[in-house]
Length: 369
Image 1 (cartoon, rainbow, N blue to C red):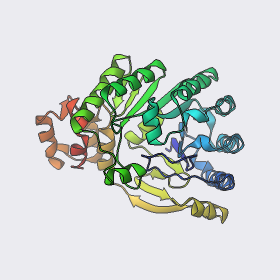
Image 2: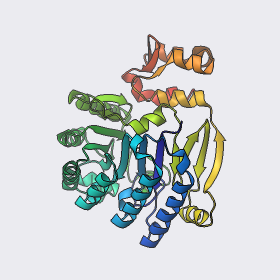
Image 3: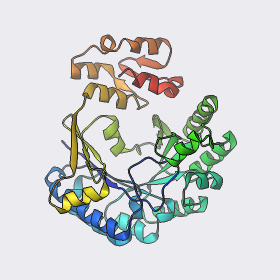
Image 4: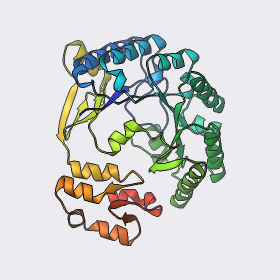
């Protein structure tokens, strides 16, 4: 049964140094055509949306849409989804986009969770990353949301920034905890190809953080946030009790989800498919009455379930997986025994999960799948 819906808004008011997500800067006219095309795609799938429990509007920056277009889209979502079943409804936002009027729109249309792209509170690093907000914008945005009764707030943070010191990281963590919000995501900076950051790296104008310092930073993040009462439940995610991301759990548990909008991905009945990435072509497809679906690909569900499931701190249940797929996991992947011997993985009763040190070496394990 399909229970998760993702909707992609590929627009940003400016392009960040590090970001390789599907996004672009666009005119108001193009944004308007896109929203109307997205509404047509929503209409096409409305019969599949009656049991949706989680909705996630991501980007890009969904709040780069003005209030009129945002309201138009949210109204349509409410008309095609059975909102009585929806438990978690998230929208991504930049701190400086959050106004009283937009917060009211969120509340009016049932959005009960906002994920803010903060990254850092340090102005020097914000400038380098190409972020338009300030530390004050972050605090102001959180206050507006809380006053509008949208209190389930996540902030996305990044560590291991170029030339970031451990002291600067500790200050960021202190500010994040001071907000007293239910969820914090904390990612290590990745030098993605086709970004300005990677271009600067190739030109030797910036350097990646030393591996030992990056490990120290990651451990500092984990210790500091856990000590403040949060549960570290996924490699990069921390929540107060009961505030784990229900939508992202669908991904991590390899369950079906539908993705709408340009460049979005879907997983339905062990088939993954992708929408047209080019925004203009996506719009034209739907204006001409065609679906923008571009590729179907059969996935290996066991492989996907292991890779995604091991991101969770509780890991995967070996008995359940072996029964589900009729395999002997340690015969299929004998390297798992080596990782257990090296204390990268731990097997406790029937649960296989990363040790604390193993969290830093996840890619070694994921590579065998």
